[in-house]
Length: 242
Image (cartoon, rainbow, N blue to C red; front, side, top):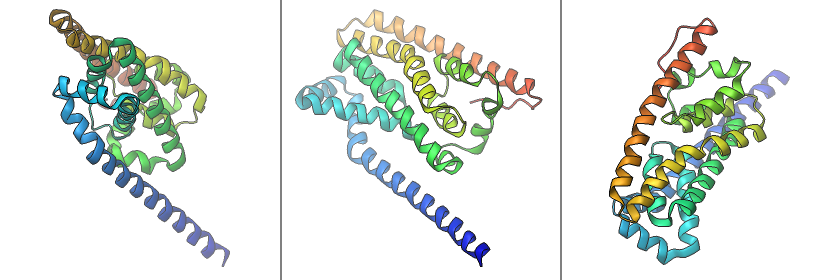
């Protein structure tokens, strides 16, 4: 009888977990449809986006932070256009602050989300192959340093790392510090370029975006080398890190 009760309890927990994740996905889809989609449309029209921000004041800035948080959670929304738009609409300093706030908050919420709901929550957003390619981070004695290094490198899948971090036993405070510090350089490069576009300094903007693109490509290669080296060190067959 006790075994049956335990089995029913486990089934109920799974049903609750599935329902909670389903509700979250519906909520996320609704926010994207009613808030994110119009905002993304405006990102392609910088003057329209700047007018929208000016017209909404504090609430426009709060909505933008929410959009960055949503981007980190869903991960199918590219982060760079949001960061460039922030530089264009708010200037480099304020744009960086808003993007950084949203990115850090989003990374921390993802961490807590995965810590609560586990692997099933990650598989909703990423295929198992991508998750397995980073399993070395669970066992490495230098795990925290590796997370910081990979997060700091331009071009790495930072949103995926936020989900993987929640699967480890890393302390929440450690993750908050890593995401707060290591996200900053890539955000600054994008907002600086957006700010240059806003003041019509097109040559400088082109140089910034060109350098950023080059660093992102180099960073992606370094990231794949790190993954392969760590996997070989632990006796695993190197998988392709994407």
